[in-house]
Image (cartoon, rainbow, N blue to C red; front, side, top):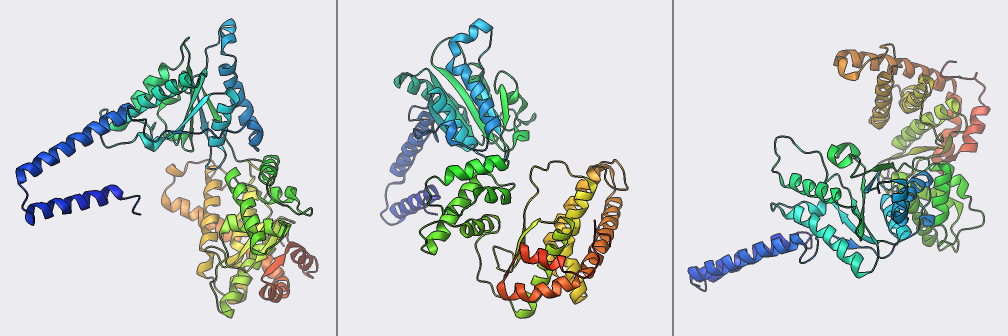
Length: 505
């Protein structure tokens, strides 16, 4: 806190000192005014020189610890496209033979934690270039013109370092460029942010010439829609590379990379962990391997075992186990709620449940961890209805055993409503093909209620048929606090009631 607010603390201390000198020591006010004027002029000159790069471009960091593309897993398509663009730097002398204009910049767009910064560092290694890093917020200042001067200072420093290190190319990487390159407001052209962006556009226009050194621009953002159109046009950011979440093969590569320096047991199956981590980013997978090592260290194990990796998945998704305690009746209600989710999931999607747990984690008092459906980007109406019924199953189970619902279903209902909205936007409801903006609030709510009430009735009917499954599994879950998928599947197969397909008995 002190480091963050040191400027405010210094101002307060300085003001108190001045007040003390004037009132107690009775210093001449005229002399004090001259001192204050000198300090003000010095601070203004410092900001001017600092912004021009005479003291150094603010926020710029040189990163000597580069890495190769082989050390980055899960982004094969992005790496291939980036390396092709970088070949224009490596083989720049041969471009004139084909009449190719060298690329000036690349924009890496994608969710957080997918490796955009790592790709930029690997690009500098691949091209043997000077690498300079800055964040978009480094150029945002309250002083007029400082941001634009810092942009000039950044490019000037890139040229100077390249000449000093006797290299041909420099790569400037700006992270979170949406802070610097956001869309300009047509009514306020004189804003400091607009001046900074205009300076960046000007520098990028003059990046490439026949003279060395060549400066190549790489930027990263997870909000590409916020960027100004002038920044995205060809001739500035010539290529926009989408960095997506890794698929199963990519996740397996990333897990293998982060397992190299960790003592894994021979029984560890990383392929199984890759199956269970659908939707994880590279940063989350790295955190998973680190948390697994922490669990092994806590237990003073020599090797990291499969159970440690499984616990780490829950830790990354939900947080650490908490010490919150509940009474027996509340614990029983939570167990019935989670069994409702698990039995519905296993009924509609056999083999989808990994485990049921009553261990409190983060904000949850219990949870069902499912084996996610791999590489599914398009969902049918029946797929979405299954997801809704699984979300509603916890509340349905409470209604069957208690005759009423509880506040524990709030997040389940939010999830179900989001899926219903997706169905409406996709034309999968009785409303047909419509836009949400064209619907009245009453019409949209009526359709949502009709869909949810219909699916809740189907879910309740299906769980009522499997009431004996809940009753047989409940004491096991209450005692062990963890229910495995095999025990759940066995109980459902032993059910004496009829089967339930797509929610219809």
